[in-house]
Image (cartoon, rainbow, N blue to C red; front, top):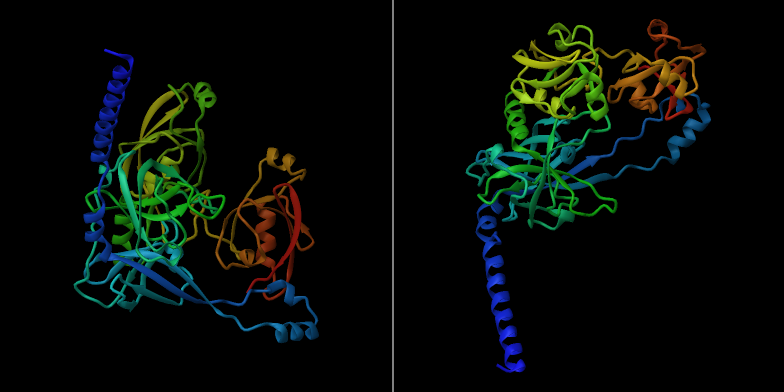
Length: 460
């Protein structure tokens, strides 16, 4: 056979192989058309209107002469309604709709729009900040609705699709795969109760609250967050799994709020070096750095320095797994807890406490806040040296709209002075706070990230 014929034969075989391979690849890619036709009617667009509240000038205005306050009032412009948009979906034919808490949290009016352009005004049945879920209700019957999938059916690599209204572009469909499960994304308040589903599905502003589907048309997640340095999708999207949503929906329907299991421990990760130092088989579990006095953990026998490795039969591989598991346990339930203590495994029985839906999160335990809206603790000597101070009290919890919140304090700030009084310990602080006058601006000095600041606050 001549070289030309051999060359032609090779080319023909190559074309055949490419055709066969392309056919096989194409045959394995899913077709989403029937799925979208079936589920899209139950997906809604949510438009909200918020009447912007005037900023609280608080302590600043309290120190102004009357003439300046009058001038400030004269120059203040009338506020305009703020409008936002998001997504959601119908979970029952009688008008219950699920969306994100952050979509409707500040809304004075909520409008729900369906694909057929029908519109309804919605009311909030309940909203849960920690899971970022909100349950709405519209007056309608016989609506198309969606079903939750069994949470254990989703796997890394599974195909998923999202439907929502990114940037107001109604009922946009995007597809991708599950990139990871159980992602911990603590909030600014240190809350970490959602083991997020990570996907590469294109999610953008306006998709929040929309459903994430498997190929059977069942909802596996509620789209909630993206990571993006640009503000647009870069293939890092995070959804709330249905295991969380199912529990939250049931409680919001029944009570309008969510109560979670709560232990009362501060925890950290266990790395290789710490595992070796404590005689563990390897990096595992959640290291208990502090147990709150009188908490469920304290009563159940958990000690500072314990390594929690299982709770209620669930393995704790990283510290972030613990709040995910405990938050889903009903308060008052007695569960088995396995810990490593002094190199040996021990079994304990703990009655899980309650983190009430109306309370702000307390990182170091279920302690009441003071007149300023704070829960504080004395700082360690190491932290004092790092900030070049002798003593101070660290903010570990902050109530929304409290005097401290309005004054601009944040969790982890270190308070060193109130009025003319320097703060050395917790007893001094409590005595000073009890004696503070109401309606009077009070100077407060604190440290944040090593820098000192002054502010004023006023107790209503």
